[in-house]
Length: 476
Image (cartoon, rainbow, N blue to C red; front, side, top):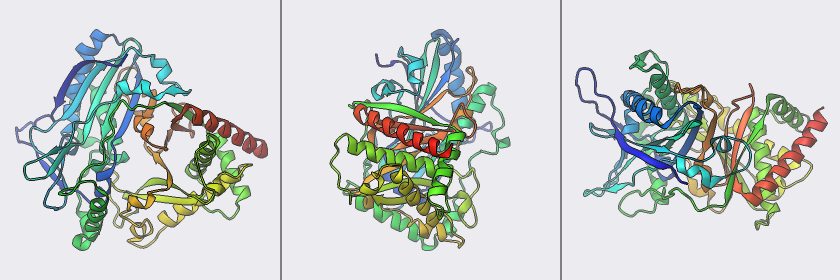
């Protein structure tokens, strides 16, 4: 069955101790604006809680969650606020005013918790009961478009566990900022008190001064707006292309692949031996290259029409906070990423005996080096061709990465019986992408999440096993 909705409410930030009303208005930067056309990111984080009955959940856990959420939102006002896109064409902004809130759904589900949190093939449809729904955008009388940016759902699996679901628009914040919010919320909830968040290094920094100074005359903002308007579907104002709603009618299955540190080191050695001139051979490069090549092969294996000269692309976001001059603080809240874009030909990645993997590693390694290894002040923005025009990918097969191993979600602990058990990205069901995060079980290991049709997933897993057998045998 689908989840049984126990309650739906709206959580406002806690009022200040001096009764001063909080408000915050931030202009969207050139790092934010390109994501106006992005679909919501949907994260599902599962936690073991074998002693949690429905009565304990409703009477104890939910009230504490609401209280801790309100406390945390006081320091993350943009998440309770809205994005305003003026009809007159002026720069959009993120704005919080008193009365704004976050949608919170409380639910109960009788699905098999152990099954959902496994690594084996699981039907994608089974996860939709835990997905929170963002309220629709509203067109105002002045032709401006207004929409909320975050929705949450807490789902109980009685005597088994709890799932925390987050749906958010990328335009308000990147992975770094959202995971910071999640971790601080968990700390506040576990402490069962309103701790002084100002003592925590991850308290968000909203200062846009550095970005404004680095964009004299607002040229990058103007360019970002031109790109969005060109690719939007609206006439009088930018319209969101985010029309995806759950549940999605799909026959997809989800799989989690785990690579240990030992296997990854052998993959890196394999690439270095066979491509001695490749200077950038990181864990990230070899993992993404391997998944990319296996994905291309599995698509061809199930009969997707392809041409060996068809261009294929791989994209991943790279955090710019430490790379700007001057750098932004790690706690900067918002978006501060550029895209590393690797390109190749379909036929090249199809090559057997792991040659496709090696070519993919060359492409990604080269793209990472050319985009990120810069020394001049504007280097990373220039080398990344930022702001990026997503229309350049029209008609191309594109694989991208959700998540980042830099942010360890498995550290999150709300106090229900330990740290997170499983991390899933539900929005992968709408695209041909992968998720990547640190392994929960193995130090130095990684988890890769995939969503594909059953037929394609079977083919993918076969190529995945065969290629690793070659690598392990050669590197033994």
